[in-house]
Length: 266
Image (tube, rainbow, N blue to C red):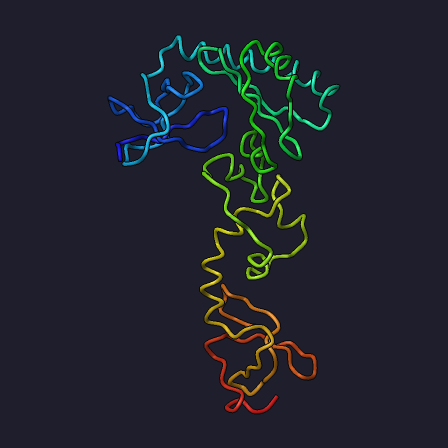
């Protein structure tokens, strides 16, 4: 294990890469990083920590490096429109998302969205001509596209995947049910069209709370003698909704429930 710092390539979303260094760079410093594809500009996003380095910091970025990065950003924007026009005719199902260059301008990363990975084949030569560099294609899924471009979530804040989230964990319908969320896709889906990532954040707490509650359809009684079957959980309140034999609904705290024998027969 070496001592590394996390760095972020700003054109690729929030994912951090661990970088080795000779002199500890300050937090948020712009640095030039050596990668397998060539030198790239990155930002230091954390303090030194043990880890296995993926890249190496060559130096702090100079004013000239920053100016060059801005010129390459503009060059990438121009290349994007050239690729868009080409793909519309040749690969109509491929949507270009972004073009970014290594700091030496020799390699262009072409980020695209498609239902499946595209086989560009002989068209790679034309792609290279249009961007003026060797092309590395990067296929993006729906979540990756939002992480790269950014979007507003249902909470009104920028999406987690485009600000700090490092990897996508599984979110399931079962998690949504446990949290009593509406199962309408419009309510529990993010801008990417997939289940909200934040459903998974809170699920361990809900799972712990539900473990101490009677299961749905279990027969329970209140201390006042009202008996019936559990119809709904309110984990954060520590309450359940009980459906009585007559069809009525009664809300009761879990810690006030008694056995059916103590409460009477339902």
